[in-house]
Length: 152
Image 1 (spheres, helix red, strand yellow):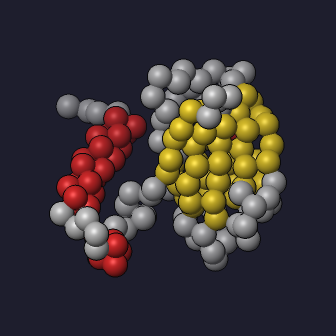
Image 2 (image 1 turned 135 degrees about the vertical axis):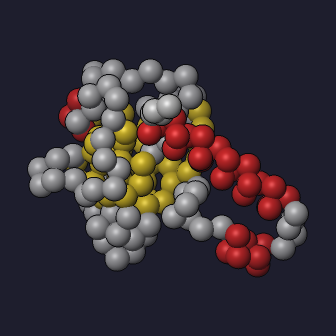
């Protein structure tokens, strides 16, 4: 039976989150053991909240990595949907925000929007290459981690 890559990834993310929380519950009060069990490449910590003005999604893109931003529950994107993307102040490398079907490949030249550290921009999903079925990716080609924020 064929399955959807996004569904498979979501199921895997949910299971990894459950595993992570179970292990964390067994080690309450032992923060020094956190890195023994947590690999941010497998389950990046990102946070979603409702700020009253919109939905905020933020997290860290590891050096040299591509991060696929998890879908926001109950959010139905369209080509005209505007979002504000930010390469958070304190980051030291540029980030490229783009939509793509292959989350393991860096963007082709001219694809997506590159933001320097501290830069923010409001764009439509169409400007980032959204086609209705592909995922939002953030590429960090640098040698240090970088923080991002997305406001919907």
